[in-house]
Length: 73
Image (cartoon, rainbow, N blue to C red; front, side):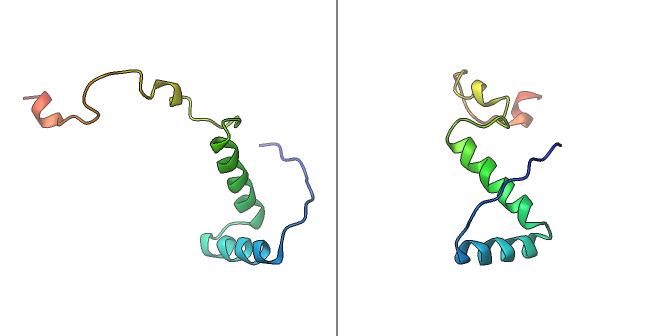
């Protein structure tokens, strides 16, 4: 994955929270910020990382769950 360097300012509270979360998850602060941006963009419906099956939701009628044991008897 190609990455582009960006610089920005965050609050001291954001900095502490991102550091703590990165430490807890065993990842980098940059990865935490990328994940946060991805989630924000998904909620805004402008993400390039959308689930390709999103458009299928609500297309079909019927029960949302099936008891597979009943189906294959």
